[in-house]
Length: 240
Image 1 (cartoon, one colour):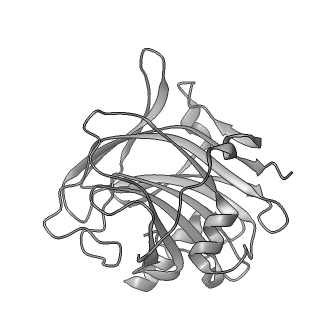
Image 2 (cartoon, helix red, strand yellow):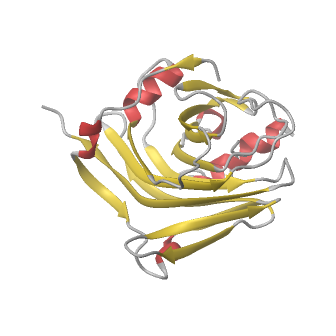
């Protein structure tokens, strides 16, 4: 089972033709500084058009999560509704992570978290459901060497917690937002990918970025979750 999950994640990357990784803590680190918003933007996903998701590919793990474009009074965003399901949207791209300083930013909002019967954990396969996840994927020539950074919004785990996925030592999970969103607020995240990689893996990026993904899942708890994603941007940090 673990081997199968590890293989499925590589499907997110463009460099691997046949490898499969199943995407699926603790140390702590500080959030990235706000100046990361000042960056050379390489790819921007405003999700402002009705067909904005057509350029994204979907990987279904168990049933399809409903991903759709919704528009509010001043916002247009992706709404993800999961009902005992797990599927991810991913986009293939190429970012230099070995010679440059890649960054990622996005906005998200959680309306409903999966209902868990056991204490929430990043280190167990049991009830491995989260309302919102964003992935940065580093494909390698040999898929078993590929690396993944997974940013999580947890309902109970503390912000800054980082650890290794129970499915693979090459997948590092980082809690960057924590707690129920009672006021239904949007939050902006700005991450220095190279810095996060160094803290998570203990060394500089070994491979370039090959894909970005996001997912809301509830297949393990058999419950439901509702989250929103907006303005995903990738680029390079300005170096003074």
